[in-house]
Image (tube, rainbow, N blue to C red; front, side):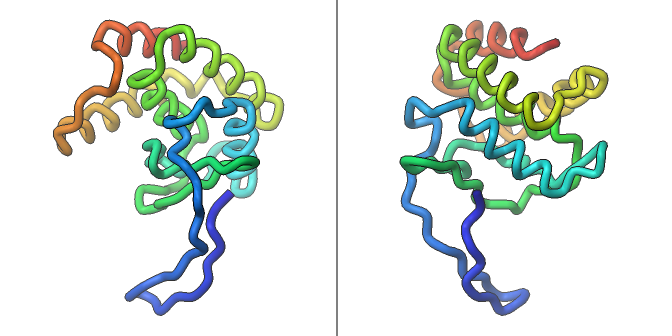
Length: 163
């Protein structure tokens, strides 16, 4: 799910496998497949509380090919609750997917992800609040619009993210 490291000369450069794929939000992506890929990534370092999280889940940092998802650009990665990573991912969906598609993909993702790694409701609210602050701050900092959706749809989608 991540490109292979081909060569490096620390701290000057790294050479990674080239991935020919599309930003996943530019496709009718398989939410179940993405959930299983992200859960496998999280499980690889999960200690019962936290794991390595991708964090920068913008569409161009998750590519899809015919049969898999690829996670790119780990410059913002850190150990965190996996729920924080999920919240950040879903905020991109809330900004770009119509309400019906958002709800359908969110439910499919949560069901598939939870089958691999339970989503803990006791940390979800805090992770969602922190993720919204980070997400909105970065959007403002880089002067990016909220997304393809009107603000009312973004807010409705975000409300759907609560447990």
